[in-house]
Image (cartoon, rainbow, N blue to C red):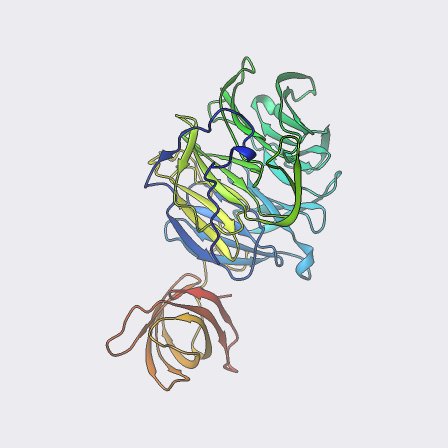
Length: 469
């Protein structure tokens, strides 16, 4: 079920300022969504290499997916080293600025896995000094890795994994120039922003008080030109780096609590992400001084922000379900977000330039480098169709493969004989069904091999798109 997740800024009882919220900028170009399904997965990390490839983790095991932005297709699926579904908890992902390393914050094993993007091999595994990694960020020169937990942040050498130091008590960090960092520390009813040099010397930039009911988490991000900080807690604030002065801000609701900032590389836009919340929540009541506590589920959401006007954008993001990690492509044209069952590709309305330089990213399905192999799908298969139009029912098929061309027939349980036509691109299969008077059916489901001579699984697919595994 799709859940309304765009905050409408309606209730003064949950606003943190007596001033009215800013008017929402409207853009029909922001918020159109293309959903890329993966099956049953949620609360997983995501990172993007340039404007070409999206790495998306899964919460249900050690599976990492690769999406080609040009086609919006999954082009590879890798099974990372490890046994069993509990060996990976891909909560947060980060790609180094040089696009040569992918870092996976692994909450299941309390470690960080480093992946070589040019060979898709897990080259390193770091045991962490802290516990329960909540986020991972990379310095601008790709030489330092920052792993944030509930008690602070640890600093590691990106090449060796050697522990370099710790920033105790901080809630989040933003890598700055010369391997320094900007930090935000959140306590009950208070937030503090500081600058800390690579040598550990620090100074306070800004501090402010807020509602004691606001969640004890937030985020901080540095603009691409290094002139402005964006701080997220009870409000979304724009802070001058040189003076620490708050330039502009707007309030946020208590529930859902917006936890993450994602900045478009061209500096024109941001997206704020609120994860789902389940548990006991305290909110102001109707009477002054009265606090209402209740247990329940609050859907998260995503709010785009026009950073030029510094106000939220009214966009069609009602279909976002269980949002987790969001990142922009390097040309700022797309934002990708992990959600229940896959990834949402969100239009930003930006026509940005791409200055990122990519190495030779590997798309080999087995993660060993080289060129992608093609599917081998000839043989007998069983179709289990969960959603159809035109009355198509579950059935069995036989497919023939000649090069990248697929033909065959599907006999449905209702007796109707359908013609299968398909084409293969890399590890992906585009399959269409044809019958008299009906073409281009909308359908989704799973396909599994039943032939003895072959083994395989085309996995979960929608409208004919599937990937061999």
